[in-house]
Amino acid sequence: MKKLIALAMTIVMLLSVCTFVSAEQPKHKIGILCSANTHGWVGAVAYYAEQRCKELGVEYNITTASNIEEMTTNIDDQMTWGAEALVVCAQWPGLEDPIGEVVKKGIPVVNFDIDIAVDGLYKVTGNNYDMGVLCAQAIVEQIGTTGIVVTLANPDAGSVNELRMQGFHDTIAKIAPEMTLKEHSAVYNAEKALASMADILIAEDHIDAVFSQDDSTSLGALQAIVDANRTDIKAMTGGGGAQAYFHNIADNQDIWLCTALYSPMMVMDAVNAAVDLLDGKTVEPVLTIPTAIVDRNNVNEYLDENTPYYD
Image 1 (cartoon, rainbow, N blue to C red):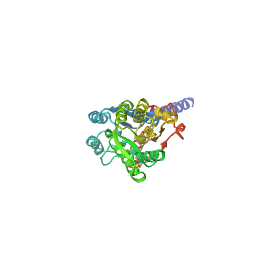
Image 2 (cartoon, rainbow, N blue to C red):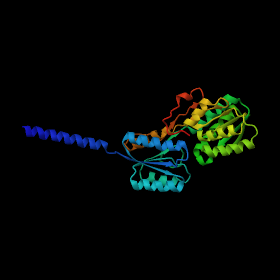
Image 3 (cartoon, helix red, strand yellow):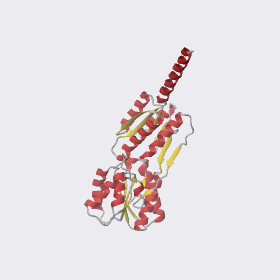
Image 4 (cartoon, helix red, strand yellow):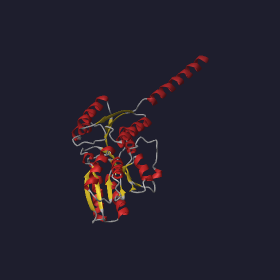
């Protein structure tokens, strides 16, 4: 009898161990393809994607690329690695073919942030068009319906730039048609934006407001304004959610600063969608995360020194 009890207990223990081991095994393999970390927002995307994969207990492979050639190679490498689904930040035009080939193989692809013309993709994005709308409204609230506004475009950002600029222009045309808009270029990088804005300030002897669509751009532009001792600029926008810019929003009393929130944490929703698809769940083809304006009135709600997205 004692032997039977001991045997039963051994079987129960073995079953428990097997169940534990099984529960610890990654249930899916997710490939995450990001741009190289030249911008705080991009670095935070990789951070939050990894964090969510760990929380869900899936095996993941994160690769970064500085150009279309590198990302195309990374897509091939992800397939060789055995990715069952991809989350892709498709930054560069020309990725339609390699991503389309993945979709044709029946592998789910969740496109994060940037539009790309491939049938069968799932998409998670912020509302880029609405960011432009809200920034236009914010500037008009600060300077009125007339004045000179410099708009900072970044064509390299593809659909993100196009949608934010379009939302801004459409809204200004409706609510402040007499506003003078002067378009210049500035990339999503504080150091490069500082240099670009310094040139803009030389070219434009009077500016009432600046429509910047990115927080890193805003940080550089703001430094250039301070360096040039310009006092004519009364308002500037941003986009994203960088802590360094949040602190400027809170502290700067000379220029009214705001940003249209576009959190990199949205990539967690993209990872969720990839896992749900592999689990056979229904996923909406497009998930759009709403945006909001952060200014000196509510910025304290968003200050968080633990986030990797600082500048």
